[in-house]
Length: 304
Ligand SMILES: [Fe+2]
Image 1 (cartoon, rainbow, N blue to C red):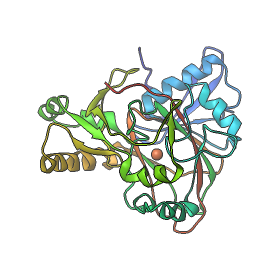
Image 2: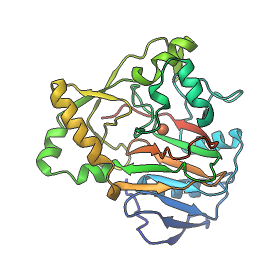
Image 3: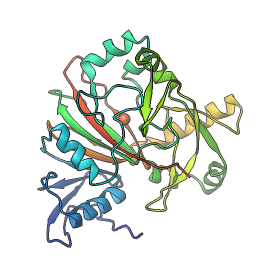
């Protein structure tokens, strides 16, 4: 597949159906705002054009959309198959595909499950749900309540991060696999709710999974660094000390400013990231201010 790169300057592109998309890039390699569009009403050619921008820029944003949960799910369904909202954390009422994080409640919630680690806002770089065999293709986040200040999200380009490594290290990383384990964050909650569900299958235990350290993006063919401090526990072929040292280097390397875009949310904004090629992290600087987001994820494939 040929990916059209929209470039790093603001531009306008016209879809085959005559819809004009105004593209405002937010950084050199990652992140573009698509302006002047109502995502409730997209024809097939516009969906295809948006998908190209998404693949190329890895995260896209639509301002001021104010979708309902039903509209949020409908938008997601234009780009793939929505999954359960989360494998372990219960979805919002009446919408099993919508996972909500209300940060003012989450600390209390996680502590009630005996899992304080998840409420620590200091380190939160991760790729969504990599602790299952088929992590989501992408996630679509809706900003429901935005704090008066702070609460931005950072996204890091894991293709650019991989390409910036020296050729010898890239060769070595291609030979490795890593274990991803959701237990540290979610075992307490799973035990509390009894069972989890993902892709229609229920489970009572979070069995660790193994993924390649470098995956080949199934749509773009790009190689992408695919480890994250949220869920990767260790590299299978190394001793723990070696694994900790190498992962520590990769985690720091992968989120350098040159690979990162920072997005300041407005209420009603929508962010849609390629979960195969990015990590993201909330900026935990909003103290006790109210911040609520809702997320819909798209069914993925096995990383290769
Ligand atoms: Fe996330």
